[in-house]
Image (tube, rainbow, N blue to C red; front, top):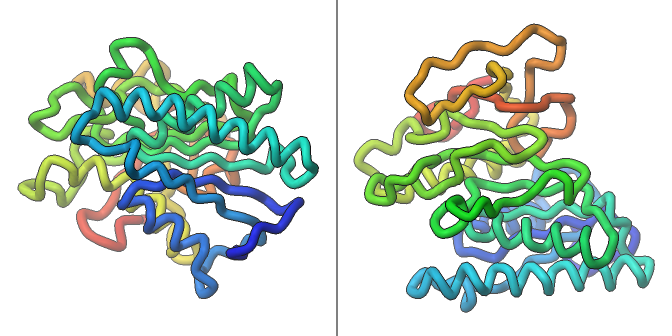
Length: 263
């Protein structure tokens, strides 16, 4: 990855939030294990994302999403970006932002981004209104659910329902292993930590997942069954998710500490 924009390369977009700096640095670091030539555009909206006024931050997410869409459209019309090579990545509220960006890009500019990765997409104020990234706005939407639920006092702040082409629910998607007694944000933050490890340790482990029965909801408290054997039942959570043909709801277990990937 280059620090200077190179037209015509694969372009990734990453939300700027303090935790997601880890993701951005991994792409930008010359010594990174990521063997891809392309560009990374970091969207710095730290001031607008302040959780001191979450309601305003939610409104700001839609506004900044429109600006991201305008940027992608401008780069496309100037021949610097191929929209199907654009990868939008967002964590928490940033995942909602990228959902707004993808929607604006598709509906206003008639362009579909190649991929959107939603890392434990924020649920408060959004889920009751049915707001989330939509797979019809992009060519491929993968979602990680690590703190799904509605009990904010328990740190359940991520969207529960599946909304992507493939939705991964590691450890059931509610409480992550190793997060017991480690604060309300531990399970939520595991989403970007898993994604980072899928990049940094990609030669060692794959975050292999298994498809589960249609209609399965891990957060419902009911036992989930394995889906039908179709040859497409195995997936790969994280950056290399498109390397498989996995679709639907997927489950996997992780280790409680780094390295999180089991297989």
